[in-house]
Length: 99
Image (tube, rainbow, N blue to C red; front, side, top):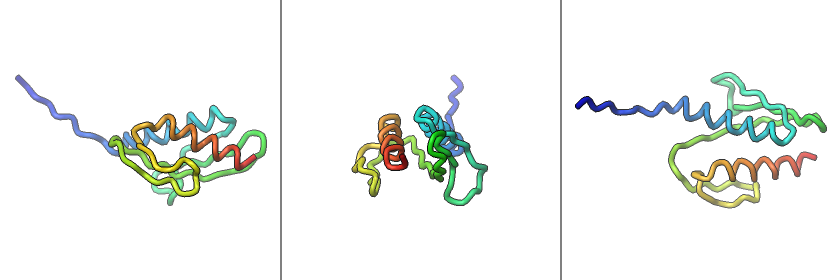
């Protein structure tokens, strides 16, 4: 029997994380735009549709469930495996601060 091993592509994982964050921003009245590879420390530029506030976002994506402190976000330390909930809480907190 032929056995094929799947090799994980970190670039695809990162792209999926960036698109997920863009989708969550768009749901909250932000107009997000992914930047090109190599743009230093910024993966997404977003403008709030009402206030016109612009933000730069750096996305870190992992397939592993890790604990990661989020300084100043109010979200505390949690498991990154729960990405949907964490992204929504962070974006909600950001939106509340920016208005």
